Image (cartoon, rainbow, N blue to C red; front, side):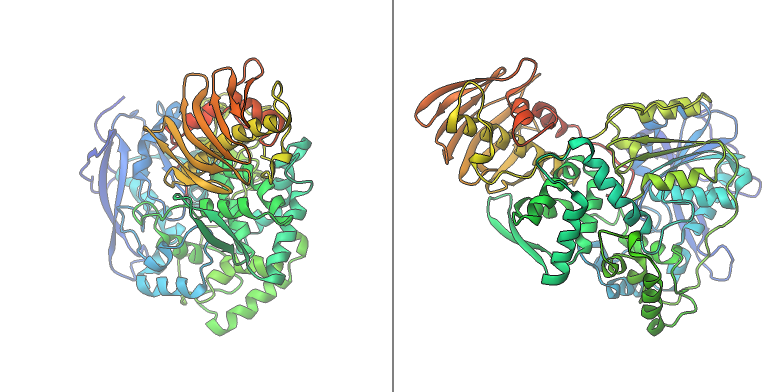
Length: 636
């Protein structure tokens, strides 16, 4: 292993490398690359990259490419080294902030940067962003980034390149492979955009949605949530389209009732998409959508607040680059450079009308249009951008990864890409969403990666593995929805299980908030509030309500194997519940009780097996998740 930098290619100037702040294994540097590689427009882009300090002296590098478009990459150098450790004996790992992101001249558009995940953003907002950036925006395509990558390769004196891309990073990787096939050594693609790039109507996602919804609910997994998730979505889409916004309320972190609404059916598309990166949110959606169809919108409204997520700083993800690269890269039905703005809407409508409804059921044609690049880019200026590279893919070893419940980049995209890569292996993970590499809890994706870089047969390491939570039933509407805890009986027994489910609901909500990068505090489904305290080791409930008129207060603490705590209960039942390592004891309705959980389970987990929260992971594990956040290398 060598510690010195590789010699630069002839004519290339070696950049000055210094230790990357907070990442001891990596040196950071900057090279100036042309704004316009044709030379017609002057100017440069200062491109920031990081390269691993220790590497083999064989002239090979491995680019790890993040998602977006718009996500910076340098902060993910160390996580990339961990997941790609099997490759580091063969390649020098290199990451970068692609042009227009992070420290490489991030494009700034406050008007779109401030939008939340479920917000409806009108085309005029994108046009205002384009005007703010100015004419240089035409040089921020993925094809320009491909040329940047090869300039880094030359600068580092590398003869061969391997590419690992996640989400949008797969599109850049495939574009590089088409542009410079002789340079490519191998490919690892996770959550693949598809061999032809993004679809202008997002049809790869719409086509896969019915399969994904039904697969999530297969084998009775959605018992108590829905009998037909596709029909539920169709009913809500029709409800919004015919009667206007679907309105409701949720409770905020102070326990105050707040109004919210799904103002357009496309927000349901983005809600389903939010579940790609939030497994507990994904598990909650069948029951939330089914309940909303039946008139109980409480959970759907709470999920909207969570799915909206937190504001994203431009340094982490440039919304300006996201919309710029999107409009310039996608093969729109109207070429931007030659189609006058007034003619574009009719061309878009005609292209939409040519699609059979089976391409996007259970959604409708106008929702598809409003959520598409075709509508987003309809007012974009007449930019003449560098076209995508279209050459054949090289015949190199390729590992294609994906989650079977990924709506953003469905596993069907991996299969279509594999058809163009004769020496590829597709590995899919059941009950998993987007970014299989970083979300896999089973270890099978890491096993596939290790085998691939060792030159061994990848095989089927994820066969029989399950990476998600079982879908949660619809929320309870009264104590009558509960069975009675064994050994307690009657209404008091139902109240015991309702209290334990209330505890579980607070932990599930905290997990959803964490994956949404929100503060770990929020409202109960029917009132009250909770917050995670003591550095994630405890949850404090204040009149927290999952069931109408049943309020729970107290502090939950995670031990080695269980959750304990004393909880005051008021409203539909009065008294207290003491969670123990073997079950629960306490006093409800003026009488003492003792409930013993099944051997080998906790009280919170046992309640999950027989009433509302069917098949949820043990509560103590959910609480521990709150102090073990995952690092993701894709757009949040």
